[in-house]
Picture 1 (cartoon, rainbow, N blue to C red):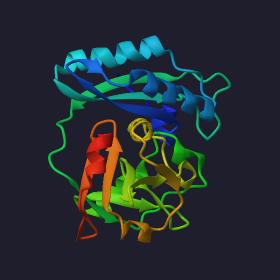
Picture 2: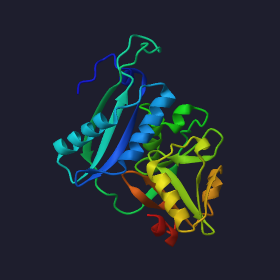
Picture 3: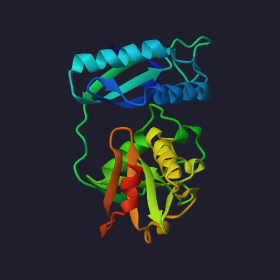
Length: 247
């Protein structure tokens, strides 16, 4: 699809996206991704997406790419509009999908705390919007590692493209959503798995120092699943057996 020059997603970041994992041509956790996209549209005042049409676009992208393991990106923009911030009275959204190779991650991740902050006061911090420049700058600052982002209050928020978890005293901890955290699909699955196994889970507000005494750290998103962290700001981090229980 050719995106016209007056598309609000291109000009203003006015829109949303979902990134899904496809294995063997099958989309994983489709209903959860579609539900999050619909919730994001409601928050932005956009029409609810056509779920059947969205799925067809994703499946066509997978078929065209002919990949055994693919990252499928479904993009929805607010459509075309004139100059300025105000949308047309009746927004005509634009939706398209692409697929690219997504090899499974090899080995654990290295995590580096960056100075780019997550704005927990912005509604966009809890939505998967097309405006991802802070995340781009955070990853660039991390210099090849994954970026650990704090919010404007200095509290733990997330990685540039993943949710954050850590283990302490047999408990699983993760930043609360109101810290400026995207409610990740895999984040929710990990929390549910842990609680089903009787593992205590706490969604907390905590500073960077909370990770210094952590027994283990890991990251989650739809493409990497559960990925342990072996290095944090140059310090080695062990891997707790608890990580395998929630993977």
